[in-house]
Length: 68
Image (cartoon, rainbow, N blue to C red; front, side, top):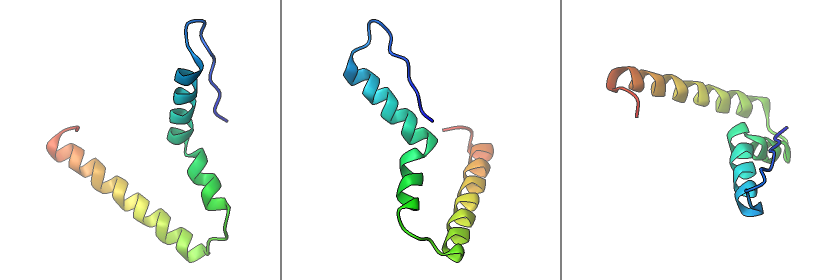
């Protein structure tokens, strides 16, 4: 659950931008979009496997070439 606390100096636009960024980082919107329709278990496994491989390749790239 994403929550933000407003500071006294912060206006509503900045707070909304911070909230949207937090929701995007936590994956709340993507999760709700995925739950809107049925996803076959084979499709889910394929998606998760491709995400794992992407993370492995990204970490190997960071080790070889440094952080980007």
